Length: 189
Image (cartoon, rainbow, N blue to C red; front, side):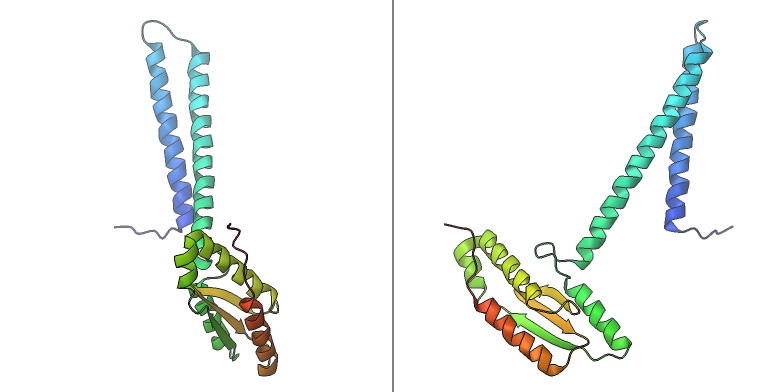
């Protein structure tokens, strides 16, 4: 038995080629039906053959674009929180792990929104989603661009500071708490 190692992209290319080839063969065989009954138009046979190949090529390329878009979306969903567009817990843990592997000692701040379930109970999912998005925006505006901000749970956020001293991080944390305590606009009457 012969085993050949093929990457996933090469396998897709081979599969696409085989699909186009099989459609072309089918179109060629189907054009043989045109020849039945002393009716034979070589131009019609050639045209139908090339149209079938063109349609197959177009279809495979379109399917490939759709597949790539779906893969890109799945990758984005695997590393980002769909509501706040912040990195998710998995991405946060990966980044912190990488920072630890290279020898840096990051400072991590965890922010939990106490009694947030009351917002959900009072205003429903739309209200709590709006509040979470505003809190995420406040956290993003109140910190330096060099750190990682993530939504790690329903009402919890985490910040990772790799290149700041403890005093700087403390002053940022105080500013964040002050900002988060401000009322949010839910856009509801």
